[in-house]
Amino acid sequence: MNYFLTLSLALGAALTVHGASAQPASTPKYVKTPTGFLLVLRQGDNVLQELEQLATREKISGASLTGLGFVHPTFGFWNKQTKTYDPKSLRDTELASLTGSIAWKDNKPALHLHGVVTDNTFAAYGGHILALEVGTGSVEITVTVHPQRFIREVDERNGATVMSW
Image (cartoon, rainbow, N blue to C red):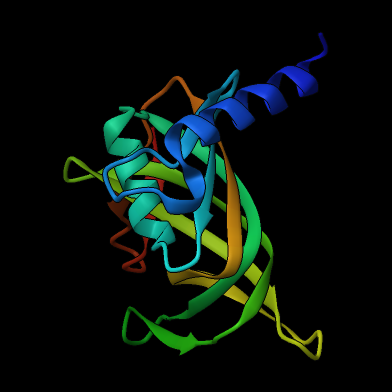
């Protein structure tokens, strides 16, 4: 049996067992893959919270991730004068691309996510993701786990939090 057929069958079985379309908050919304995990999140799910719970529950040392779906994002643009993010929230957008990493800071998961979304006119918006809720439909995220522990620490030169290992 080829890899993709095996993965599809495993995902189907896992989602059937875990009841992905009507999952209680305590039920995992993911399946293990040969390289990490595949999350399938549904309308109303808090994407950042689900990723943090996955990292904690599965003791992920470090990871890279990609995703797509329907979302209500809040983007942030780094303001180097105030050393904070200037936010912009959108509703009812399609997540054309999600990319990021999972690391650790102060013994808690520290996510760094960027994305690009489009609205119903196909205008694109993107940047650093501060918040992300699943809109109509779902969000699918592939998490590729790495063996080394990734950490985040503040770079004193600019106040930004950066990753190292």
